[in-house]
Image (tube, rainbow, N blue to C red; front, side, top):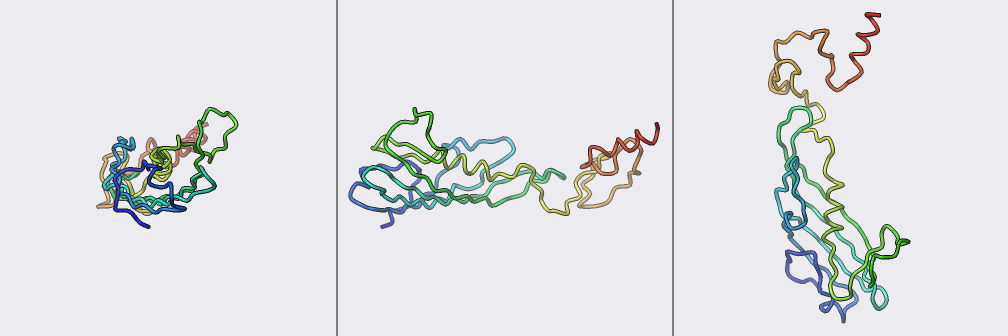
Length: 181
């Protein structure tokens, strides 16, 4: 059985008492999940497909597939571009509290009344944000001397001894030091 589209990742377990499984579709705004980052703009609501499965009397097995689109700056040319990100996870929720120090990394708890996967979704999405986004693998970046975007046109700057030939190689200056000694 599929419910209508939701805008939250908090599930009322009273709706689930007499069923073995239930599927939900959700379009969740990123702001309530704490997905506010200076370097990343979430362009769309998160598209979530969540399935709950009863395991025994009180355990709930959750599967979730999440997709969205973000805007990031290229690490070489600083041009903003869009990236589709997606993630999926499977977790088992048990009634109880997280006070046990020996709990497993993939063990989650709920109070028996509501099950909230918001934090799990937030953490899974954060891991999918590229650490060093590139608009393309062949991006030339910016000229380290004049700042011209080298993807658009070549600049007239001459390579100098002070500027390393490759801005991505921090050790290029070491070869110059060896030549002098």
